[in-house]
Amino acid sequence: MIPGQTGTGTDPQDLPASTAAAAVEADADADARPPWRLPWALLIALAGGLLLAAAFPPYGGWPLAFVSPALLIVALHRRSLRASFLIGLVFGVAFFTPLLAWVINLAWFAWVALAIASALIFAVFTIAQRLLLNLRWWPLAVAGWWVAAEAFRDRWPWGGFPWGRLAMSQAGIPTQGWAAIAGPPTLSLMVALAAASLGWLLLSALGWTDARGGADGRIGRLNQGLGPRRRRLVAPALAVAGSAALAFLPGLLPLDPVPAGSATATVAAIQGNVPRARSLSGQLNADWVVTLNHVAATDKLADQVAAGKAAKPDLVIWPENSTDIDPLVYPPVYQEIESAAAAIGEPILVGAVLQNPELNAGVLWLPGKGPTTVYAKRRLVPFGEYVPFRSLISKITSLTNLQTTPFVPGHKTVVFDVGRIRLGDIICYEVGFDDLVRSEVAAGANLLSMQSNDATFEREGPITAESGQQLAMARIRAVEFDRAVVVASTTGYSAIVAPDGRLIERSGTWTQAELEASVPLLSYDTLSERLGAWPEWAIVAATALALCVAIGQAGQARQARRARRAGRPRRQRRATGPDPAISQAEPGQAE
Image 1 (tube, rainbow, N blue to C red):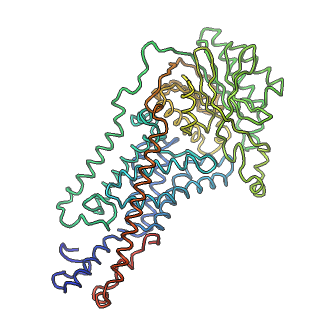
Image 2 (spheres, rainbow, N blue to C red; image 1 turned 90 degrees about the vertical axis):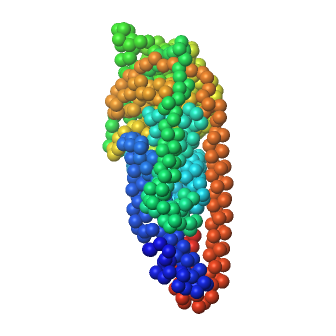
Image 3 (cartoon, rainbow, N blue to C red; image 1 turned 90 degrees about the horizontal axis):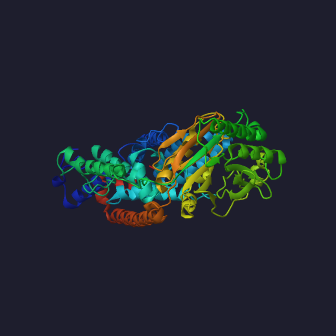
């Protein structure tokens, strides 16, 4: 289009005043249309979702967490609300399907159902992001949108499913320090802000933004009257540089260093290993062998201590489900665990399934005394430890027979006292929930442990995905609370994590291992612990307010288009052709 001409190809100066005004309006509306067809936008969304999945273990391409949300912004540019839902659905399916591929080891339909459910939630929220893109300072609003969407998925349905948070892709990266400053939600915010700024830069490079930085062409035009292309890129380029510097700023700060002379303890994580079966039922029927494997690994560590090849641990941690047979009910199991405790001569935290009621528990076992303090898992895995809609699902699959008795959730925080150690325990899935981990630290824990059983989900397919994703979460938790974290898994990864998120020790997978290290016992609170959930709620509230403003603006724009359409004389419509405001999809219509 030649500057100074309208989309009709006619110079407005050659037309009557009323007709010229209508032509200019038609040109502005034409610029508000999507720059390309919907299939191309869906392709961009597909690429963005796949790239975001690759930012997480087992691939670990963390820079992609800064790129993928930017592609979603480009895909949503000038789209209707219905098209935005479809774009969000494609992005969500492309993201959650590979991210959760390990669920296929439970059942293929469980994997498909979980991925689609997560994608549908994401798609609904994508409509809100499309509206936020109309705001003047939309990069800030979009960054808050990611936090709000994650906050919702962390809590609903069935208590939430906190997988795929941007924050959890940043383990071991300087950005992780934001977790210690204001928690994982703020870390997600910083990643999303840098990504949104990159999205602004991409739109500006393509000439699709207005002079105010708006992503919607209906706000105004930048192509006419702003000068050379490089001028359009100055503000978004500065935004990218500034937001990236802000995201990586914690790497330059001395966040919660371990004080000299801090108390320490030697801890050990036992990975007994599990016989690898081809079927889920075969995997679950190896209870006795699993317990004996952990006894044998503990005896091996005791032999190394006796030979002077290893330090005597102050505490030994066995993983979740290291005994699926209640030792209080079955004497042979009790005797085996007691023999292991006697051999090592120190307390063992045993991951046990207890009966009457059915509990997934961490049991502190003292040599010569047996089981003492018990922590019961509070956040149970839906369709794993209990089955919602059991009567309906049992008509579809026989897998409900593998969980004939649902587990009962615990309801209280428990800190285990072991000499100088005050241990806060979280079991597997619970590591993803901010409030559960925070409650252990608030109760006085100076050391954290995560007991996990990864054998069920890593028999086939991406065999390190689930354990790798959980280990990344444990590393973020270590930074968040400045506590060492002991990760004990039946099949790996097991690890001992330093308070700064470094891996002191880590095992392989599907092998027996004994890990041991000296770790600091820290008791002060990080800023994140003192702030609690307030940063997350503040971000969500601000984003909700921004969405209300965006909805109001969208309503006003829609009314203005209708008024303009209703007030235009018929002869003007013949002179300028059909009104693009009519041919363009209204918000809520498909493109």
